Structures are given as structure tokens and as C-alpha cells.
Length: 287
Image 1 (tube, rainbow, N blue to C red):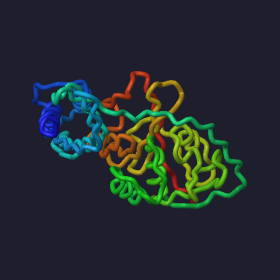
Image 2 (image 1 turned 45 degrees about the horizontal axis):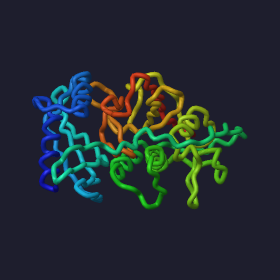
Image 3 (image 1 turned 120 degrees about the vertical axis):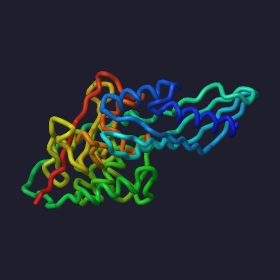
Image 4 (image 1 turned 90 degrees about the horizontal axis):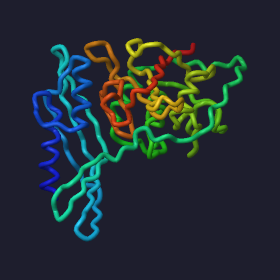
């Protein structure tokens, strides 16, 4: 099975390359997005690591981690995008018959909307260090920092850690519906839940603060994008901007489906719909 899985991953990798005639839906989405932004995938490699195997009679299900690396060329410049996803390969009588992602991105963690802070004149001065936030995002994009809790849907927890590494101050402890904090084995809803985080950034006047901008190209490294994939008003994903592409558009890092230097729009994601809505937040200093 290992040999078959390796051969299949090599075939999948070829399907993502622009000149390949091999296609699947995941590769097709990636290709369409690249074409839209004037880019092409010139090389792709996929490494697989088996996590577990379940066998029932003649059928075996293999859970594994697939680490994709895409070498992307855009207007004469090259960069590497990475994505790590959990997948399940199904074998019948030793033959590979199916391989599907285990998609956790877009999972919605229910939480009450965070309470608006009652401003008392205190602002908790800070200067946001974007370089430190981005360094943290690059260091931990594909692993868990044991100093913080981890969640099955971990995107907002990861972005919060990046902002904290950049010097954003925690406020509101121990009320989980107020402020933005993670302390003593507990956390505010805004720290870990995408929908609560989106509303916190929209209304905070104490501690970590942001202003909403209209277009993604207005964002800088260290800023935040929130995603409502279904367009139903419930935001279910968060990313942090780590760079810009040759068109001046954001590239982001994220958890859940761990991603590095991914194009901001997520049009290559299976969670994407035509109803998607975004919120673009520029983190501001408070002196």
C-alpha cells in the first residue's frame, strides 16, 4: 500500500503543474486561481506520512498527512507555497480506489458574540511589531506551540498567537465574552472562535485594535483576513498576511489546513463558494 500511495502522490503532484494533462478537481481549482492572477505552478512535490490504518475484511483506510510544496512563478518571480492536509486513502484488496481530504477548514465553533468593551479612558498603549508577528507565523505555521491550547479548528487561535507575538496586549480576563485573551488554561471566545474574533476586531476600543479596509491590497504583512465561506453571516476562518505577491495582493499563513504563502482569496479551497464574504482588518498601533 505504501508503494501505491507514493505512486499516487507523485501522479497528484504532476496534476498541479501547469503543463500537465493530468487533472483532478483540486488541481483544476488551483490552476484556475493561478491563471486568474497571472501565475503558474512550475513544480509540485507531495510528501505523505501515514498516521493510522484501519482494516475491515478486504478494505483498508489509511489516514495520512500530505505536505504539498508548490513552486509558483509570477511575472518573473518565484516563491514557494506550502499546504499540509489530512487525507484518507481507501484500498480494496490492496488496490487504491479512493483518496479524499479530511476537510476541517470552515468548521464553525459556536460562541456568543463578544460584548463590546465599555471604554473607561484606558487604551493599553502598544506598538504592533509586524515583523515579529510574521516571524511567529512562519515559525509555527505547520506545528503547535505547546505554550498555547490547540483546537481541531485552530485557525483563529493561531492568528491570535501571531498578533500576541507582535505585541498586541490581552484584555478582558477572565470574562470569556469580553476582550481578547488566553491565560491560565482558558481563553476568550474572540481568541479562538473565528466569528467572535471578527466581531472583536470590528468593535474593540481597548487593547488590540484594527480598522476595516475595503480591499485586500490595502493590507500589510501582519494584518488579518476573516472569511465567511457560505456568505450566511457566520465567519468561520481567519488568516494572517505574511507577504504580497507580484500584483501587490496578500499571501497568508493559516492553521486547520496548515498553509504557508497561500493566496488570500481561498478560491482553490473546497470550502470556497460564490457567496463568500471577507473582512479585511489592518492592525493599528495605540500610543
